[in-house]
Image (cartoon, rainbow, N blue to C red; front, side, top):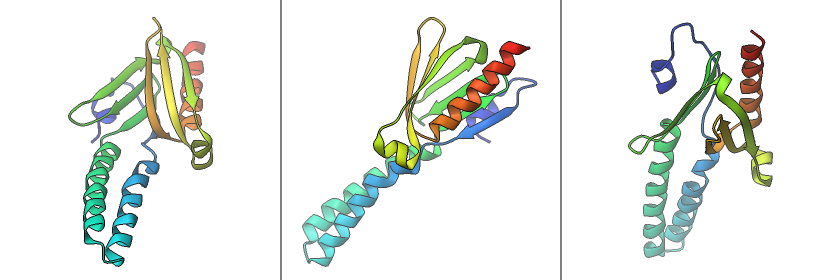
Amino acid sequence: MGYIDQNLMSGENVIHRTKIHWVIFLWPAIFLLIAMIGFASKSGTVGGIFIVLAILTGLRSVITYSTSEFGVTNKRILIKVGFIRRNSLEILLTKVEGIQVNQGILGRILDYGTIVVTGTGGSKQPFHKISAPLEFRKKSQEQIEKTSAS
């Protein structure tokens, strides 16, 4: 049971979930490729350095991927990133002023980006490398509309 499921209020239902995008595994894969090239060319030092880099960055990416949750419920937006150093946001839909999506060229192609949730009082929380950020914003806006209509 994840963070979102553990922190649901009574009568609250999850409408949409997303995760960190798989692109966070790109650098570990590149380092692993360089390590394999290094070992294949009989350069054990280069291969050894890059295999260590691949393991360290890969471990960090696995932890980030498995400990990040993004959800929209019928009452709130819930976001949690991190394991030891946790960054979380729980904001009532009635307190959301806007959700900004930032995507570069690669983000548009691979469908990931940064979302910035702006709450009343000017608080802004950016969350990076979110999978399908436009869908997250759309689902959030739909729920905000339903909340304000009722």
